[in-house]
Image 1 (tube, helix red, strand yellow):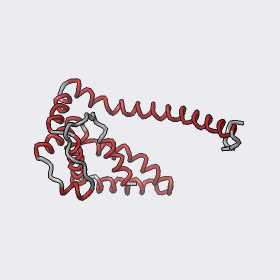
Image 2 (cartoon, rainbow, N blue to C red):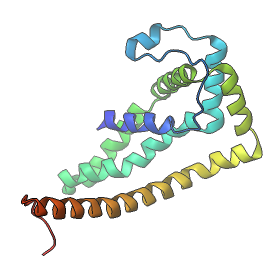
Image 3 (tube, rainbow, N blue to C red):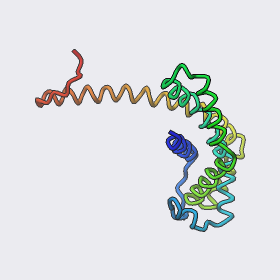
Image 4 (tube, rainbow, N blue to C red):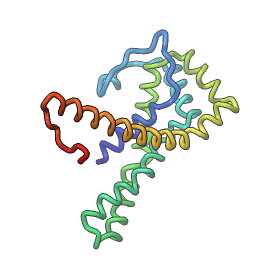
Length: 183
C-alpha cells in the first residue's frame, strides 16, 4: 500500500506544466540516476521549479489525502479495534514521512525535472510561476485537479457503459453472448 501511495505521489508531483525541451538530459532509472551527474545549476533550477509550483509540498499533501482511505481499509479488517488502529496509523505516518524521507523524494523529483528540462526552460517556467497569474495557477490547481478528477470519473463511467453496451450488442449480433446485458 505504501509503495502505491508513493507512486501516486510521484506521479502527481510530475503533473506540472510540461514543455518540450530542446536538449533535456537523458533520463535514467534507479541506481543509475544516482550515478548520473547533472549540472548543479540545472538541479538548482529544478528544485526552484518544484518550490514555485508547490510540487515540493505535494508529497505531504498526498499522504494526508491517503490517510482516510488507509484508515478505512484497516478499520474494515477489525472495526472493533478502531481506536488502536488509528493510533497505530498515526505513528506509521509519522515514522514514514520524516523530513529525510520527503527530502529523498524531492531530490529524486528535482533530478527528474532536470532530466526533462534545460536550465533555460526551467528559468522561463519559474518566471511564469512567480507572476500573479502563475501563483494563482498554483493556488487553484488542487481544486481544478479535484474537479477534473470528478469530471473524468463521471465521463469514463458514461462512456465506459456505452462502450460495453455497444460491444455486447455487436458481439450478440455475431453470435457471441457476453452476458450482463440489459433485460
